[in-house]
Length: 359
Image (tube, rainbow, N blue to C red; front, side, top):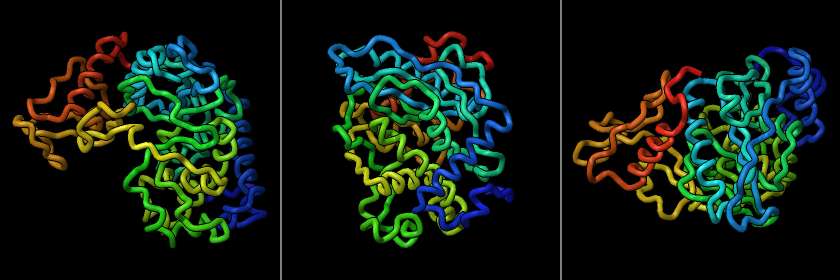
């Protein structure tokens, strides 16, 4: 949090805002006024991609794919691949995919506006994310939900490094959203810290699901309630030094899990939602590949995780430029999940016009 104080901060100490709904919205109103005061009303560009739907898709089950991203080249090339596979899978049998919006929280249009349906929203006021850029994600969702016209009743919250390997149905059941369980989100092992944000009167910390906000399929009406709380819990967690140190890069994930629990929302945990190579070996029982981890192997197909391999695919190798077309395939013995990932990246880059052009 920057040294600047807002009106809500002066009337109620920041460390005491968590359970106060009024303070949640005081901060929300502050951020809204800040963005508008600086630039006037935000420019919202692109209403979301709408096209063919899966064969037999029930309109009541369709979900809008919402992708939060920045204008950094690293985020852009991943978003382009993700959007390509969304378009490929959307109209296939078994899909409940509806429209698509990239929620761009860099505050200004970028070079992908004509390629990917995009809504431009404000980042947090300068200094408030303290260099933790994903802290902008909940604030981006608050703005999008407030200003966008979303036809679907459900929303899939997704990330740029997601690849759809087959048509995705709506995994939610009515008011019970669907989420992927992360092994490193451990509410019961962090009870002391989480009690700062989830008081005892709310029940045991086991009510906090071991999830992040993505991938999640949730009713739009539920997310509209959760998003401001998620934003404020994220900010408060980042303010608290003990929490920031304990949760690190997954802080915003814990914040979504806490915010959902504060609103009494429980998620159905779906391990088949996605896989994460190189640890998950096959794609036959999943819908999404999440390529967050580097894949390093010897030419004999042996994993060398933590050490650069003779063959590798790691998204962090492409911070300054997109991966080239026609990446070399993994050597024999590398798991099918990694082979499929590289083949799908290659197919996308071969078919996206102007792949290596500057954006």
